Length: 201
Image (tube, rainbow, N blue to C red; front, side):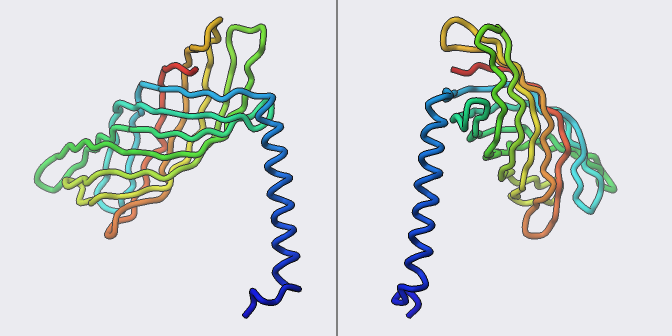
């Protein structure tokens, strides 16, 4: 019934279409002044704590790797889609024994990066922030089934420019899962530091 009322929905639809066209034009012009990048990172995610509301759980340092795809959003910004794998190595104490368990966490993220790459400088900086969703396999020893999390991150990439398309990078950052868990438990992980090296092209 409401869709047949042209006086209500048609002007709103036309306004929305105009806004979409303006945004698309702005983004298209932004693409002309920036470059897109693809990259890989390998390194470590650090130690910290896991808050479960039960017995304390420690997160030990583990392996971390990731893939990212950056698109320009103006001359000094990029938005980035990332996929990261972090090794979650948890250790806890039960009344009669101490347990250790490791499992992979996959983190799907959307990030915004500053683009401080000078044309005549061999080194550049790309500070960034991001958020995402993560999924962790079952941690039986901790009494946690397959769990999911909201994640946030802050980081800086140090870029080593070269005459060809392949560039090296170092990343230092902080990763945090402030909210998450399974059907029975609420959990948070971190904050944890990250230190990784990689390439982008």
